[in-house]
Length: 561
Ligand code: NOJ
Image (cartoon, protein in one colour):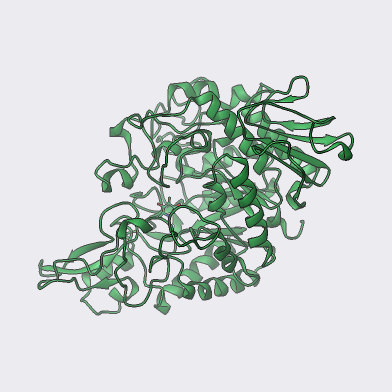
């Protein structure tokens, strides 16, 4: 197999609850993924990252793990996991699993033991238990606010029923944070890594990789609400206005953990990889996460958060290539995942929508779906032309928009509940996929039930319909991925060319010239073969909000007319 495969790989995120349901309980499962692997081969991806499928009470859709070395019955069995890994490898697809080391589920035997144990015991020392403030310990130990809303601390009751210590949870109260200064915790996770490496997985996406270590003393933060998920909106440079780095994000001490993991992965055959989910700001700090002896890749959330506009896009592309390139790592690119509003809606929003807040029917000024999709297709065509590794989120290849019309009673994201229904949360990007234009769940489930209701208009976006249409978003993705592979764009370079207008980006990557029109007016293309285009081109005119890849007849004729 090719070496350094991850430098240019296209990695497809499967969110297993919503991918395909083989057993008919309304929730997707591992056999459902295995059954559809050929669709992913057909799409042209190199690897699949599967969000958590481990034993879990599912209070945060599996990001609350009660047993890291077993499969939750809702998703299948360990045999099903083995079958999936095997079937993926048979098809030349790498399989990456999700590791959730910042916290466990409150159902984890260690946490249950800690609750039963006395303050100061070894069992409590695996998590972050502290006495409360106030005369009777009635106030949380500090003022940190949970990412999902409300305090980051929950008070326990001691064995005799009296109010007891508090425990820390960056996320939901059902997700207690481990104390990563405790060697027992380190050993637990080395064992978990070995368990899955021995089963043949090709790597780990590391959840909340920036959260494991906390500043000693757990000091109060100046602005509790300003530091929710990462450090605030992405910035390229440390600015005076940049939010203060919170004492629970991106501590320097976290890196030695990943060095130990990297060494473990290197001791296995093949090229297994670590990918950091680290919302670190500003972007140049992310370089620390992908030094040669640490993680292989880090998600480029600064790119995801960049608006569809030429200038900021060019800045973030340059900054990303420089940041990751400075330590010899590939840049990554991503537009959607299970935590953000789908980019087929998001890129046309005209208001701020902080990560995780989501949108719903009561959100004012929602964009018009067709023009939003047009931007999304253009943005994807730009992303897939960039050198490095690109991440796709299931359903974006169908052009799925955010499911805005979800009824309140169907919502399941803890964000919705912990914010007293003030934030819609992330359910709108997690709705089960439409595979077929017929059937109660559009082919998602063998039954008539899907764990979140699918919007009716998704019938027209079903994969089987799109497979038969050359103009569909699915056909566009298949084509882009095929040309990207053919021309090896993933391992190319970006050379900016003169642009005729400030809202148009023009660059060369290998044999292709990429023209991304982020503006509201069409633009005339230079002469050449069109290799791919996100919107129909007539009379050599690239429409507004569209991206074309072309092989110019004569590069000297550039810049564009
Ligand atoms: C990041 C995951 O992507 C998100 O879905 C989850 O809720 C939090 N981490 C907590 O694990």
